[in-house]
Length: 133
Image 1 (tube, rainbow, N blue to C red):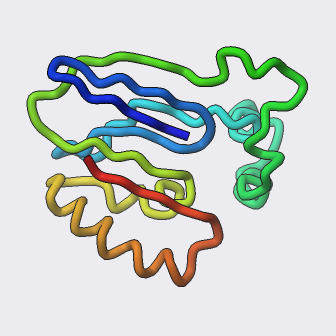
Image 2: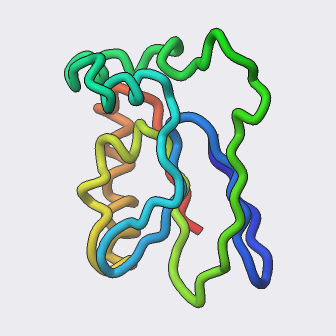
């Protein structure tokens, strides 16, 4: 889950799970959030293989933070509002499959995103969402 509130001077981000928020820049997407799902941490710590992570990241159990308190699960941050650019909010069903499209001119990235949606509607193995602001 990701949410943003944009004011005249800042951007407030609320985030948890495997969705991401980022800026589309000339050099590619600059992610402002990172995944915090347990299986990703297990993969990054060498506890499971990448193949195991990729197979399991679609399971609901991958997204649950069991055995702990739900308190402070949503991470909230405030950053200065950029002078220009586009914010991207997307789920892992989008970024995990199409992150390679998010480089270069932001207007070209927007076009690539629009062209990727019909393909994902047919062939996606995970649910996906993508919003460009």
